Image: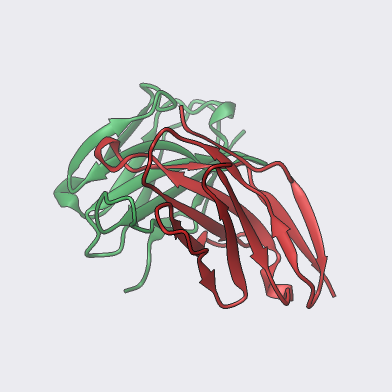
Length: 116
Length: 115
């Protein structure tokens, strides 16, 4: 069974500093996608970044980047130059295979606090 | 593109009552998903639709739960005879198709409190 594990329930970072959120997953698939979603308090979940497993290059979106280690099944999110608006719950997500529904498996989340 | 909308945002009900939630996906998306999120947890899959067809239901979806998506547009999730354990955030998401690369776009959710 596919699982997603986020081992850091809470993290904090000083404004303008860098923080890394961890995620590990388990799958028997060879080609797949991985996602990080952000869920601000009382607001909807939005996509932060997406990584395709067969691409060796780590995905980057502005201040957000990933460290994807396929062999280790690790998919961490790095936030550079942290801003107050980055404070949120962050979820790592792995989609089930497309021919079986493609619904996401989510980790338990990491609550990120940004300290002014 | 107005995004995924869910109604109501909050629902408080007494145990044993029936409740219904509505989700309006992004208009061109043919996939629609329902998830449940309890405090301190990530969302858990409940069911999904490809157009109007409900293709899979999680074992989390007991027989008190029913979902529909008439005409492949909006969807409703009904919970009959609510229990305190049903208290959670119910999230709806939509995507253009079932391809693995596709992003799921989420609504803000309906928070259910069963007293």
